[in-house]
Image 1 (spheres, helix red, strand yellow):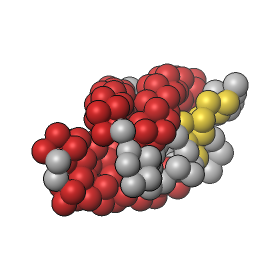
Image 2 (spheres, rainbow, N blue to C red):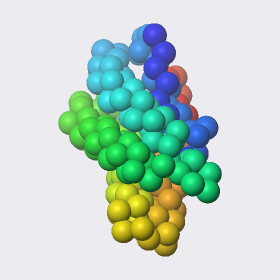
Image 3 (cartoon, rainbow, N blue to C red):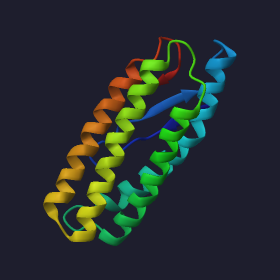
Length: 154
């Protein structure tokens, strides 16, 4: 079974995480992948919905963007909680920590973007977008830190 997770704002529609549950390393590795797969799947769905309205060209649907981004924030927070609560297999600790850190920056960006929408502030919206982009970059680097063969990849 393959689960693809898209961690995106409209700036990075090609960023994805794949979690392959069939990997036969250790029970701890399998439990870790199983634990993170569901929350990442939910984040993918929320990010896809937000991307479809927030990337509306010069006239995005601001109300729907705000609502869908709020759902994306909730989903991303659930992933961070999972990454902090799950038993972390040997060799996954740095990647797990850095992925949680990247998601934290991403969440800060989503919150900032939504505040910009609520306040009709282009500068605050743009600041949020910059944080989102930075968070996605940190996440991408973190995914590369998982051990070879872990089948957690961007």
